[in-house]
Length: 508
Image (tube, rainbow, N blue to C red; front, top):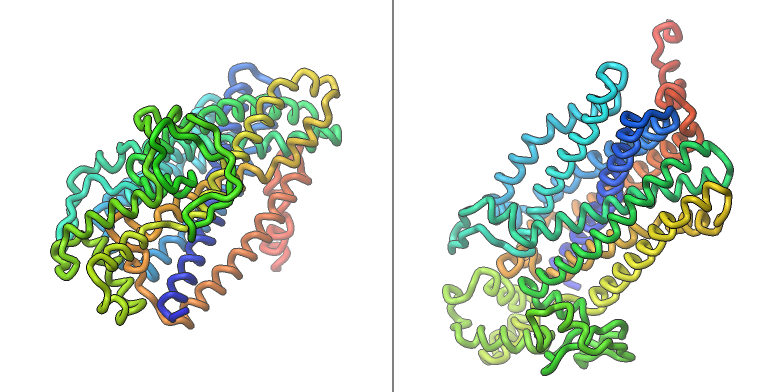
């Protein structure tokens, strides 16, 4: 592997791992806050000390998750500036407007967090309850801004692409594109499922040990219904998102569905198979007839396959002059230069037909991980749906001490939302390759490569920081669990050693 390829792989790995670690906490924060707000609203409207204790208890986990999420978000921005400067420069017309909105939201979000966590005795009960819902709205708005950038990278709309510079023509086109709205809907729904399963799994542990029963049962009941609604919303938004991918990113759709050639009649849906990219087929394929055309009603013949899309792009490229970059879009020119860098002699001696074929083949993402990852995500979504529905249907029996196997099942389901979320994120991002901005900027061109030593040091620092932060998070989470819902002042009790260390009397 050449040095540029090694750097690209290393820095992509660094960003991917950093983003994945960050995304462990963002959906948990959103989902936990929804559960906290539901319990706090129940306590305010119906009364009940156990509901108030439940909302306080889960609020501690929310605070921990939110703080860690903020801490893990900043390294991503530093990496964009230091390692991916060409991308940042190209996307600046969009980034500067979106980040300005996010910056305007941040002070209100911080104030709402402080009121929610520290203002319980300073404001009235109803105002404190309202602060939680306001904060949830602000967090959703912040998620909207970030996801709109990612959606724009998948479907770059609202921008006039000039040869030397880009100009943002419509911010609303970026914020309200179907790709953005589907991604926001799907991500928030998955986040609410993540928080609900966390609350259910933790409450199931308390119920199995017969601890804090009133808080655990109330939390379990509220989270189970949140999980049911969240799973249904996630499934429908995922279906709508897949429609958008088929329309705007046909190559990604063909790869994740294992489609190699268009079926002439109503197309079937591949449930299982082992993709063979070299031969362009799926081994051991299991297919449901007609289901693909049923799901994509506007495509009765089925979508184009990988080979069809390669041929379509090849024909389009042949209509251009490959020797004249001015006739190629900026994205195609980047792919051509990338291939030429890899093997300049072969490129120079190749015919226009061969060059067009190579460029078209360059747009195919890694099929096998996409195909497998999409099915893992879908399978876990079905399992989580079954678990949430089962939990909601078993509340009465669990209150009576029955169906303990359901509680054990939910305890073991705790990691599944994160696995499904990260797998879905992998499908979205890997499926976009070789583009960082789809069809406009290649991933290789987006890199502003530091030296190998600097890159290795950055990865090592990221790993060290991640391990350290993981240990802190694990310790803090365990201390919250040990204190339990009955502890009125967890922070004071847990950090008493720090208070004693800094106490003036002790210092004297």
